[in-house]
Length: 111
Image (cartoon, rainbow, N blue to C red; front, side, top):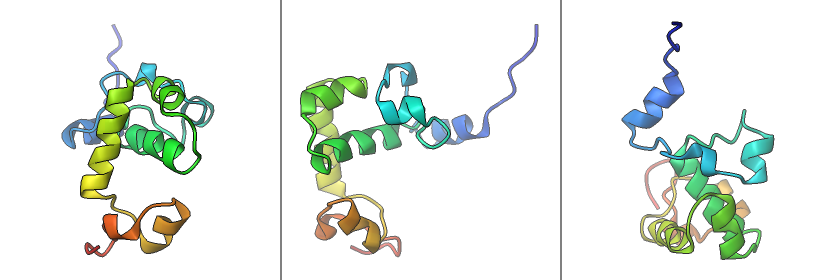
């Protein structure tokens, strides 16, 4: 029986405790149409995109949560985590993503 080669990205995600336990549940078009960029195995990317889709694109929570394989309460937990801890993004990304700069951690480490 052929053994599967270890995937370094999967190992890194597992090590960072960010490996999505159910990547097959992500049915969002961005993840299905562009898997080379959007990786459903990356739980942080999935949750970030889910919150962004609601906040920036104005899509309904129920629709977005279902497309990302989460419940509405899980969406609100992810959104609350973003609000509490902010996101590690550069200053120019903050405004383009429609995020409150006071809640974002800049790439230099400050807010």
